[in-house]
Image (cartoon, rainbow, N blue to C red; front, side, top):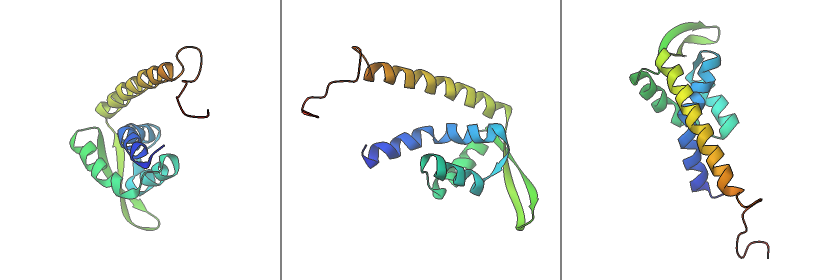
Length: 118
């Protein structure tokens, strides 16, 4: 897969992945970025603008908590709107991936690509 396509796929699921991470437990930006880097290969620089936008959109709220390793950390917590957005995005994702899978496997198997493997 080309790097351009992979980048676009990652960008398309980034908000949903952050919402999913926060559905289980509150988190601070660096920790969220670490999970995203490990899980889908997204860099740390992409998380901060996204978190600000999600806060502005009312999907997350923040609070400060003391840290044993330095200054207090800003934690993000899903709001009711954030949980609703996650449910909606997961439904859309499941429908989309099911449709793509159907297209890729139509006619009883993997698509036949001219000039590939012949």
